[in-house]
Image 1: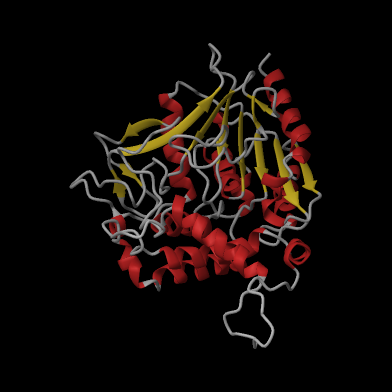
Image 2: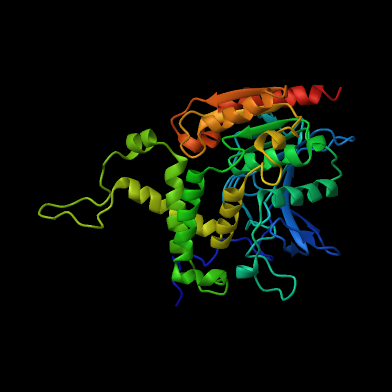
Length: 394
């Protein structure tokens, strides 16, 4: 009898599952979609959600770009088809900083993701079986090109603003570099112009953890029973990442050196006796396995490590010279994963070319996740950028 507590082999959304608020756009049905890797995909699906109403002249459209394990559900409660509330629910909605009474807001699950857009868990058009190990390497630029196809489908010629944090910020930067005439303003939060060696190193550890899980089966595990998928490797990868998402101060203040497995009188210290911080990491490791896919974790993580706006463009200066949109760059003083200096670099390189740019720093001990936790500090700067962009259309 199956163990009801066993974790599923994948937490991916699959065709036939409850769609929730997802909408779906399919392209590359006649002509294949070329990727940076030199390969191509056909019958590409983009899952997306929208909020608000598009103006008659399509001038009020805002694109949100999600981070690594995010998806299209940026706003709204948990419910059928959506296991968790929107990842930026405090920021997106009626009367909120990204006001859906004013703006038509779009968020798409990225190419390579696992929540409705084409990714490793999706059915291959040739045989209907999951891509698995057949899914190619994708880049941030590939993700943006897929979003550009969706944009045309929606009848939008120019985004009023493109906004993203972490990997979402990478997408936002590539939007401004690849399609400068389609971006009226840019908000890049806790991100970078190119991944550093240390950022790549963290990603490499996570990939190794998944790759060494014998239940990963080189990426072809989708027919595995609950409890027989690569959840241990995925959980460890997430535990490693979770350490980089928060600061030392937050971990110390919250957990200290407390033991989760309390010793009783006469007990000796055990090798696997856990600290409270270990229990916290294990919780997040199991949680990701219920809503995400190991192959997508690999695919998206690799895209982040490959991120470099200068690739094939000569230099950072030449690449960023294509950016013309007024920009808000946001750093977090306690961010150890994407340190604030990287966002200041974005502001500096644009300021040197007389592009209107403002740098704002979130004052928070919460580390990289502060852009999700301390969204109140982003409210006024975001509102100002959107208001200015809207006025520029008058």
